[in-house]
Length: 82
Image 1 (cartoon, rainbow, N blue to C red):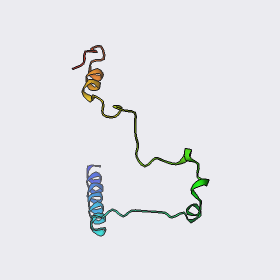
Image 2 (image 1 turned 180 degrees about the vertical axis):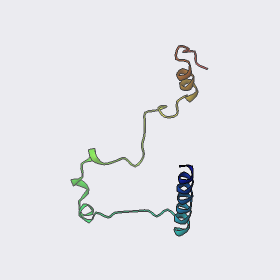
Image 3 (image 1 turned 60 degrees about the vertical axis):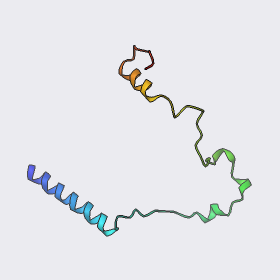
Image 4 (image 1 turned 90 degrees about the vertical axis):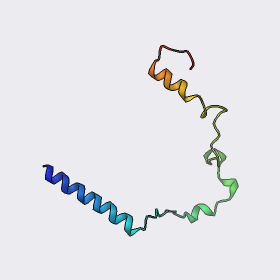
């Protein structure tokens, strides 16, 4: 059993190494073009289904005090801010 695990590990490492070498360490992007959607005008696309270019959360929502959250999770009965 141990020998089988070692062989599988060796094959996995060799396979990953060969994959990296064959692509020269480059990640290839994939972009599928939908020509039937490119012909749509801007007015036919509803604003509800369009994504915004930048995600804008409410003020101070993401950049909150993470230390206070960790303290609360470690000691939920201690509500004294640090």
